[in-house]
Length: 122
Image (cartoon, rainbow, N blue to C red; front, side, top):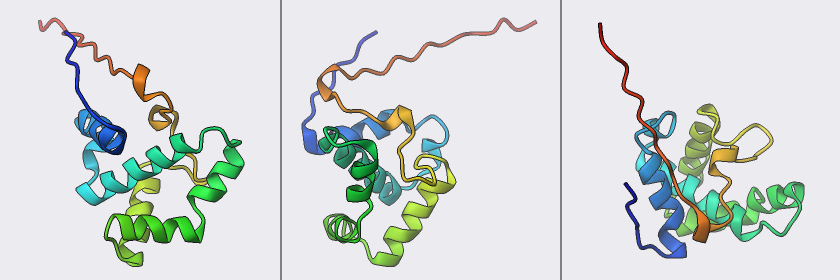
C-alpha cells in the first residue's frame, strides 16, 4: 500500500518524524523535541553542499542556536534540555551528527517502507 502525502519544505521533516513516531526512540519524544529535531534535519539538508564538519559547526553555532530558539519560541534552557534529550536517545551523537536514518537530503525521492512479519503462534 502506498499512501502519498502532499507537503512542503517547511513541514516535510516534522511530518517524517510524525510518520516515524511509533518507532523507538522517536516514540519517546515530546512535541518540542520533535520540532527541534525536525529543524536540525531541515538545516542539515539545506547545508548538504558543505563538508560534514563545516555543516556541524554552522548547525550548532551560538548564532544558529539563537535563531532556532526564536523560531521555535524556546528559551535557552528549554532548547538545551531538548537537545540533551535528543542526544540521550542517540538521535544526535556526541559529535553533533544526526543518525543516518534522519539524514534526509532528497525530499522528492524520500519514502518509508514498513514490512510486517507476522509470527505464527503455537
